[in-house]
Length: 444
Ligand SMILES: Nc1nc2c(ncn2[C@@H]2O[C@H](COP(=O)(O)OP(=O)(O)OP(=O)(O)O)[C@@H](O)[C@H]2O)c(=O)[nH]1
Image (cartoon, rainbow, N blue to C red; front, side, top):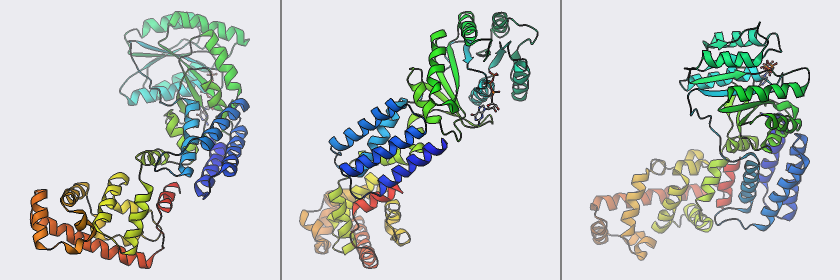
C-alpha cells in the first residue's frame, strides 16, 4: 500500500529502531528522512515542514515517560504526529434515518461507480439491502455499468438511459425506493464545464436532501485532491470522503493529507479494482502499517504500562547469573503480568527461544497471582534467603496466606527449578540481558 511512501517510511523507522544513540544529530537525521519520504509522496510541503518541526521539537524537548527508552519515545512521537494529521478515530458509516440517502460525488474516472459497488457490498455484509439510483445523464455507459454491477450483487437499480433530466431521475428514484432503508445516488462526473457539473450537484443536493454526501477522490492525483474537495464542498455539503486507488500509488500521501484539510473525514479507502478491495479508514492502523510497524499500537500500550527498566534489568541479570532469590522471582512475576507470558518474553531474547523451562512457559496468570499471595506472607529475610524456609516457616507462611502447606512447597519447588534453569541459560548465553535488548526485539 502506498508503494514508495510506505517503503521509505518503513526504512526510516527501521533505522530509528536500530539506533543505539538518540541525540540531536540522530533526531535531525530521522526528521530529514521523514521529510524526504513525505515530499516524495507529494504531501504538501508546508504540511511536511509543520509536521517535521513538531516531531523534532517534541523529540528534543520532551522527556521520555518513565519506562520508555528515548528511541521508543521518538517512534511514539512520529506515530502520534502522523496520526494527528489524519484525525485519530475511524469514522463509521452510521445509518440513522430511514431512508438513509447517500449522494455520491466525484469527477469522472475517480472510481465513483466502482466505489458505489464497494459500499453496497460493505452494507450487504452488514445486513442491509441498499437500492441505487442512476442520475448520470452525461456518460452514455453509466447506466449500463451500474446495471451490470447491481445485477451481479442482486441490488435494485432505478435509472432510465433515455431520460436526460438528472433532477427528474432523482425525484423518480426517490419515489421508487421510498420504503427502502438505504438509497444510494450515483451522479455525473463530467459536464461541458466544471461549473455546470457543480451547479447540477447543488440542485440535485437540494432535491435529494441527502443524509450524507460522499465525495470520491482518485488517490493518484496527489495534492490536486485538495482543489477538487474544496470545489465540491463549496457546491454541496460534503460529509465524508473516499479515497480510491491507494494500491501502489506513490502520490497517495498527497491526496490523504490534502483532503484532511477540508474537514470532512475520510471514511473509506479503495485499494484495488475488486469489490472487496475496500476498507474502513482507520488512521491509527493506516499509519502503523505505513510505518511498517504492525505492532506499534501494542508496543505503545506496553510502553505506556511503564515497565520499570532498572527493576527489569536487575531481575534479568539475577535470573541469568544464578543469584536468583524469591524477591527476584516476585519481580519477574510483576513483569510477566505487565508484559505477557514468560514464554513470549523469552522468545524475544535471541538464543533463548527453545530453552524455556517447562514450568515457566506453563505459568498461568492465576497461578502467578496465587504464588504472589503466598510470597506476600513471607518476610523480607525469607524472600532473600529462600534456603532458610524449612518446615516451621512453611507452616507459618501457609497459615498467613490461607493456603495448604503443599502449596507453599510447590512454590518453593517451582522457584528451585526456575533457578536451576536460569543458571544453565546464563552460562550458555549472552551476558547482559538488558531490558533494552529485550525491548529492541519488539521493534524488528
Ligand atoms: N487500482 C484501483 N483501481 C480502481 C479503484 N477504484 C476504481 N478503480 C478503477 O478506476 C477506473 C474508473 O472507475 P469507475 O468506477 O468506472 O469510474 P467513475 O468515477 O465511476 O467514472 P464515472 O462513472 O464517469 O463518474 C476503473 O478502471 C476502476 O476499475 C481502486 O481502488 N484501485
